[in-house]
Length: 412
Image (cartoon, rainbow, N blue to C red; front, side, top):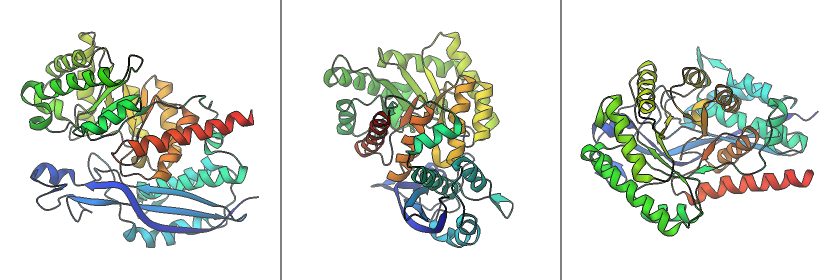
């Protein structure tokens, strides 16, 4: 029986940065890529600091090595999320608590071992999401290696799913201010774009939303100009709560979002995080009111919820209440990838759409495992990662899916 003979934990680099959102909002003066001022959120040494990762290496008794990598999301420590992850501070815990639970384990079931690791409690609290995320990736990779299968096949076997026959659609994660990047996304036929971060009422929306309406119209014109007549993407804006900040109540938000839908017509419009509240209860209540207001207008705008949907139980409650059209399953916030898999299947059972998302701070290793999960579980779309340069993340996810599908077709 294949088994784990040793484990190595290697501090590594993340794909982007961690940003202290509370400090950023309190002192928004820019200094190049940085912000002036001191950090506010525990765990941050600066308002903007390079992302860090933990590489988890499982050495198997047949000489193979399985790998997983865990990180914090960019805006760590807010909206119920774990604090920013610092690998150096976690090494003692990894060696004392995690390594003994893995060395010598037989690779019988990826899902069962992942659930065991995901459930570890130290001093009354679960271990950091980044550790659970990276370790469970390595577990599924190890079981796939031991069975001479792709991770998507292991997931499909253990969760009784059907593997996709074509790549899952990808949302281009980008800096909306970089027009050349948007052009590249259009030329590469991104399925959804531009994502971006339209977080500033003053800079991104403007008075009565005029700046965003103008941006949307120009984006639509550019798609028509260089995209070709057969290219029909969805338009996806990530608002970070700015819509509610500007318009305040549901009816006014719905009216503006319908105007925005007209500006991007004929392309479908998805709006992520139009509202971010201080508590989950307020968040869900406000989303329900917004969806009701949109329904009264027979609006075609689709709402994507992110903040306060960090865990499997959060997503279960969100799906049960029907507070959004889609939920972004933010992979590093979910802990073990067993939770990610179950979240996609849960959304489908409740009739809610799912974006298998994550963070620009992720790595090539975690992105590749995300592609495997996507093929096995078939969410509505993926978010490109790592980084915010679009090209690299889009390439990593697309090629991983294409390679896997080619292998599966050969086996048929």
